[in-house]
Image (cartoon, rainbow, N blue to C red):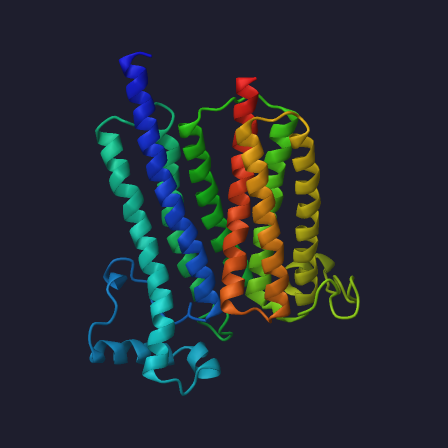
Length: 347
């Protein structure tokens, strides 16, 4: 191996480690965002101050000013009227922590990127995807405020459409970052194969399931039928898609939303069982076997958490864990897709 080739590999490895660190921070951000929503803390900060909002209130006067601002909006007037300042501080800190972590992730990404860029450690073809990730991160912050604004009007709940968009973009950034990191650690084949398409298709279905979970969260549909495997008295409840137009039920009718989320879960269980068995029988590499086991473990955990979350009426700890493991399930599917591509190259 030439000196230049070895230097490039070392640079790629360092960039991959940086991307994995940022991806872990985004994963924490996604889970913290779920906790913020579950504790109904997301509307506690009623202004978007990207720079001066970095610091929380530092004295009692500033706390009272922040609290008085909150009192002018529907969540206090219709849901939390009469809450104490200490109660307000609790929900404030959840939302503040979520926003602060978002700012820190921006610095975690930007500062190393500038170092890698100006020291010419970023190889050709990688600079544009990295710039794209930074732009998407900025858009994610703006989209988060756009989501919060929807709950500062008459109805003190954020729009489930904006919530799904906010979560979806976070997951897109996370997965793209991981995919780049996997490729830098282990350069992979670009040739298509049947298993390549199936594993990437699995990733797409899991992503759609995560989006459906956002609609469950945004409409509180998880509280509607705290039973399993039946929804109430039947597996297929009545009044599915009972809206005009019918397709709107998938986004606004709580019965249909919960039913669809369950159906996504059953479909994913079937796909993983079928695909995993096919791959296992194909004499796979050790890495592919590890990916299959990781995927099966994440799936089993996710199914158990989903059922427990329903049966226990969506407690914060279980629901946040359910959301976090959904992202880990997608991570395992991405790792499998990458491993299958790598095996194709080695073959």
